[in-house]
Amino acid sequence: MKARVLRTIKKLKYEGSKINSHRVSKIAGISYVTARKYWKLLSSEIERLDDDK
Image (cartoon, rainbow, N blue to C red; front, side, top):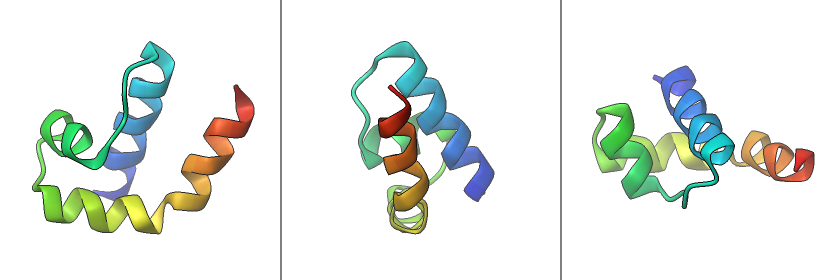
């Protein structure tokens, strides 16, 4: 599940799309609560993706 969330976030960043936990949950096919939980767990990895731009 964690990998699915991270892949979805990377895909959205690559496309230049707006990223938030609601969108991630919809695209990854998981509940918002689960997406939010993993969003918090992955926050350092998400920040690193921001630095790569």
